[in-house]
Structure formats: structure tokens, C-alpha cells
Image (tube, rainbow, N blue to C red):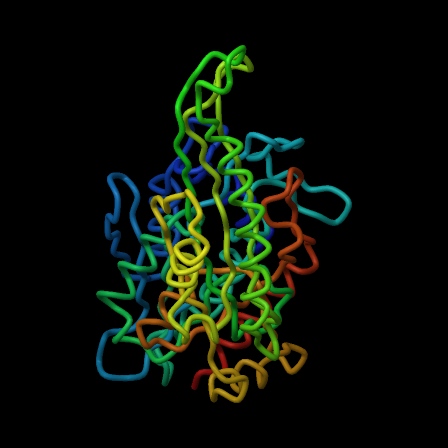
Length: 375
């Protein structure tokens, strides 16, 4: 191994596709990459623990200094990637070309992971002696329900003073993000032959009409919950499912929605409460199924640890982001957290995902310098 590029190639070539959301491959789960990382980290004298969160799907926790009372921080990318079914390149090829490394996870988040690991390797001889202990924690399941970070937050957040969650932020410091509510809205009806639609009750049309009213009403309400960095809360109807044949009146229809909530909406009771009250007030014929709400994340741009990051790299700016990450669950548990890493979020989840090699190398240099500064 000669550098972070070769390390990232190894990581991309180990499939770790999240099995929960249309993986597009049978090579799923985080076990294989966790096993690789365990060996790699132990070779630089890290003490590794694998904590199984779901069957065969562990978090990885690596420590390089004893738990002796000194302050601790963590570097925390996630192990899983989104699916590969729509990709136009070899998702696990890790091919180099045009100054880029291509493959699933190259930016989200195996690129940030490789940069963090390289920073630890370059400082391996001094990690046990630093005034601040630096742990490496890799979370499973971020691309679905964040079980890994939720479990870690419950059991370990109190051990840490600060967390840098690995995401492709172009090395800017994401100190605030929106939360999210994912929910299914369901309408039911009565099946009938389409030649006699009056004998049925069309669930698809019932849901479509309800969504039209709900989206307009919710959009206006959400616009009142704003944030100086993140902007307004929003709603999106992303999936609509109904029916089996054109000659059958459908008796069931589902729509999956995504509400992105600002801290103001969270503080006012959250997106689910607003959704429930709006449906009830309007008398809409839908039920909410399997809602999953994640909190927003925010720490002050003036936080002392943000200043320490900027001392290592003055060009890193405190910024906000509309997306969601593991950092929110850590922050909600009382652990101040930011997102930071090389690469661009615009490449995450794309059909030809890549990271610029220069960006990866700059990220590895940053983490090397930042860790070395903790003396």
C-alpha cells in the first residue's frame, strides 16, 4: 500500500451495499468491510471491537489510546453504501481515470473513510500519547434507518467530547443539517371491474386527490419554519404505488413522502405531529404507516472544536446542509458533532459515483494535520 488512493481502491472493491433499499446486488451488508478494516487497523496498533447491531451487520469501534480520563473524540464514517442497480460503471471496480477514482462509495463515504484512516496511519506512532484520544468508529445502516449510530449514541456517546462524521463536504464543516420524516400515506377503497367503476371505490384517485390538498397545505405551513442557514422546511412526494391491472379498480394505494425539517419545526413538536394534525384538520381519507422521524442537527459555528478544525485548515468554512446523517443521532444524545470529509455530495448516490483524486489526497492531508495538532 502506497497511499490513500490505493486504500480507497481496496475499500470500494469490498461491496457493502445496504440491503434494505433496492440494493441491486446480492453482495450486501457491512460484515466484509468491517472485517477488512479490523485487520487494517490492528496492523497500526488499534484495538478493534465489532458490535453486531443487526445479524451480520456490525458497528466497528477502534481505539488507539487507553480510556484513562483524557478527552476523546471520534472520526465516524459509515460502512454501508446505497444500491448499485442503476449504475453505469462497474460499482466495485475502483477504476482510476481522468483524475478520479470511480465506484460506489467513492464519495459517500469510503472516500472520507480512507482519508480518516490515512490520517490515523500517518500518526500511528503518537496516537497513544496525544492529549486528546482519537477513536475511529464506522457505523452500519446509515443509508436506511441509522441503527448503527442510534445504538452507538445510546451506549457510547457519553464517552466523547466531539465527533467528526465522515461525509463528502468538500472539507467544509457542516455544523447544522435538516432532520427528516419518512412516512407512507395509505388510502383504501373497494375493488371492482373497471367496466363498472361505480361499483368500486378507487383508492388511487382517493390518495391522489388527498395528496394534492395535503402537499399544498403542508408546503404553506412548512414555509413558516425557517432557519438562517438551512432555509425552510419542505415536503416531497417521492413514491406512489397502486393497482395491479388497468381493468381493476384499485382497493389500496400508498405514497411515500419525505419532509425535511428545520430545528424550528423540531422544537415546535416535529414533522409527524404537524402531518397528523393537518390530515385530521382537513379530514383526509388517508392513514400514516411506518413513520420514521430523524432530528435535525445543529451546533454553534463558534464551537471550540470547530475552531480547532479551522486551525488545522483555515479554508474549511462552517456551513449548513439540507441532507441528513448519523451526526444528528450523536448530537441528539448530547455529543457535539459535525460532518466533514473530502469529495462532493453532488456525487453521492449517482450512477457514476467518483471522487477527485486531488480531493482525496487533500482530505488525507487534512486528517493527518488535524490529528497531529491534538497535542
